[in-house]
Image (cartoon, rainbow, N blue to C red):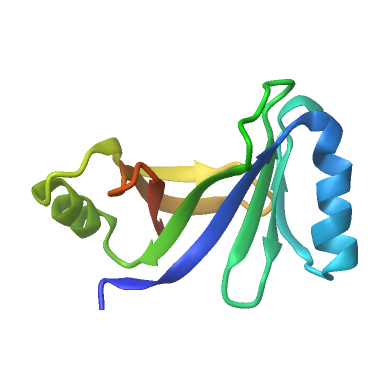
Length: 129
């Protein structure tokens, strides 16, 4: 099977909301922080959910639209094949496949691509390396 599950859900928040978000997911729901990165203005972290992650990051003081889910990510072992299928089906790829090492603690090497789904949703194809 090409798609192996949902890797993470990403939630974007203002920097003045970060402690409230950490409290809700970490303290109230008991999710441990697996990775963290950035500086106070653009801080980010990933909570472990058992079989997936909740990623949270700040975007300075930018106003957010109603609802704060930014994208969802499918875990895959072949990002390039996902891109090919999506593109050949007539959907837009907004970020071509690329290798990245997220400067988290510990460093996190990945391969990713982004596309737009059928109702305008942003989808990430995510492969751990």
